[in-house]
Length: 69
Image (tube, rainbow, N blue to C red; front, side):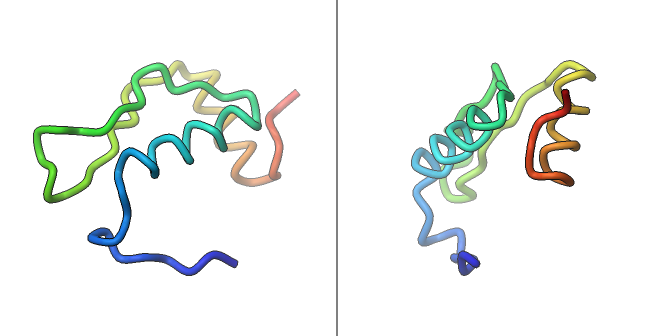
């Protein structure tokens, strides 16, 4: 299990690319995934909007470890 790191220790661009790669592994694309540069101290990752079918595939992947058929 990966230990949680404090936000100050995490590069938001690396976090975004890690998330993008993990989503890609289960066939999920967040087209609006980006680092929110308006609040650099908070190191926020903007997930953006996704279609309902993508939300369902994400939920399934989180629960089962793989995308819905």
